[in-house]
Amino acid sequence: MRTDLVSEPGDAARPNEDWAGVGLPASGQGGCVVVLDGVTPPGGATGCLHPVPWYTARLGGALTELTVSCRDLTLAEILARAIGRTADAHADTCDLSHARTPQATVVVARWSADTVEYLVLSDSVLLLRAPGGAVRPVLDDRLARLPRSALATDALVDATLRNREGGFFTAAADPAVAARAVVGALPRREVGALVALSDGAARWTEKFGEGDWTDLFDVVQKEGAGSLVERVRRLEAADREARVHLGRSKTHDDATAALVEL
Image 1: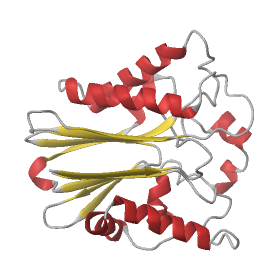
Image 2 (image 1 turned 180 degrees about the horizontal axis):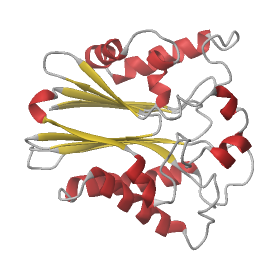
Image 3 (image 1 turned 90 degrees about the horizontal axis):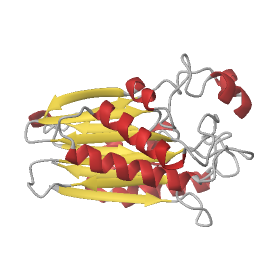
């Protein structure tokens, strides 16, 4: 088994709000990968004393531990428990009902000798490569399908779309959101490798159109996760002024890519 993981902040002067981890049990028969993309709040109150990296570290740590140790639980059940555990850690000091309480997108994959299970919530990406080379993307595209007019302002998004039916969902403080995740499982013999991406790394395909998901997987598998992030940074820098591809997005986003060859 080979793993390759890179996580780089979009701005060296600000903490990285992504979180990533790989769990490999001593048995060698299974493991997990977790990638979280913390949601950067706009200026103003969030109802919470803690920054986004505090939240992603707590949630990511809980997800990794539970995913490896609780093989009898589904990934949705594990996400619900991890959200609940994280919420309990600051419920006494923070207003967890605030729309901008710390939150994150989620990718989790778990494999055993027989099965590969997966969960995706919001706009991070999981790619599954078959032994023959075909790449299957696992996407939660609810945010991408919303009309741009519905996303005109942060206040409008918070009031009508964020963690609401007809909008999109992220892991925040309500464990029930785990039931909204995209989940599934495949026989392990059908998955030779996987790549988990925060949307900052997925920009290479989704925003800049440099290649499809198979092309992106090839870059990570042949050149390394760091090469993908470097490519994204060059594209962001080249589009800083014209913003043909970036539009209103931040120029540099936190970028995380994790490869696991099973």
